[in-house]
Length: 420
Image 1 (cartoon, rainbow, N blue to C red):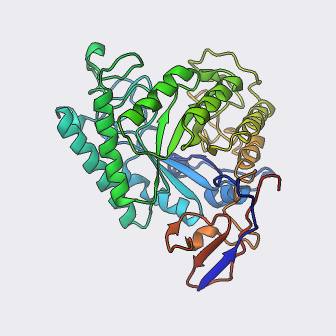
Image 2 (image 1 turned 180 degrees about the vertical axis):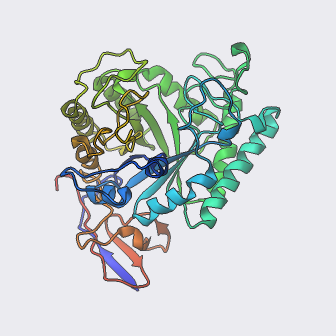
């Protein structure tokens, strides 16, 4: 069946579609452990992803590590366990639920963040030239595995929180020998550029329609943040979206985020911006944090933070994505004393928290097409969409879209313009 669908007429200034969702990488582990999820009224949720779609989320993020079994450091974390092979079923479920997929390459055997960007053990002895080739091969081969399983990511992150570079060296390398990048120093920037260009080459070859996200986390330091993306320009790194982490207990109040967004929007006008990681605890203070916070650690406080965050982001035309990190965290009633307690479900009851609906509202605000379900209850992901040039698109946008589906009723897609 072929269908031509005309969305609502929109103003010429209408911006890109907006995405709301979260990193949901551990959902299969929680399900296997017997975790139960419930909606806002306490009704059991048999499958979390369709529920989140009906709530209004339209994108999910999944992380991958190179070979987490190889990491043997004292800080080894069982939650850093995802390989490209292991996440394929989850990615298939995300797509089947009609959602867009963001794939987050850590390029490490364990967490990659501003404190550590350890080179995987399998690449430990490679020189920089061979390492670039290994990154290209691994990226390309990983995406081929996904594609062969019927999954093509809509967004790809080559690196996670790479404010100070990536692939610094194997775990245990002396600090003075780690290949970090810093503002004010020319050391290792060309190396980082080469690594990213090779990673992105693999992405573009296998998933030419996917949008590339370069993810940093110096959100509270505008000078460092801008220096990084200016270096990306100098190094001719081809990417589409600036991805940021923002946690108030690490990065300060929302005014800090506003300063970062205002500067990025002014200095990099051709780039969309996404908050690819955020969160706020509903119960306990997050260990190891020092910034004072403006909201109590309660369900109401979490929701107030989410509401103010969405309100702020809606004022920026360039901001097109909001992802809550570890939204599926669920201690299934055993403990609330884990390292991180900032999910969108109560870990003692599994019940959805108020902030879930608030985060979802970003997708249905201003520029967003809204939920991944149309008003008849059909999932948009059941169809393949095309623009008038015959090019595949992840979701129908404003104007005319062409939808193809083997069977089933026509779907009416509702577009929006600012103010509707």
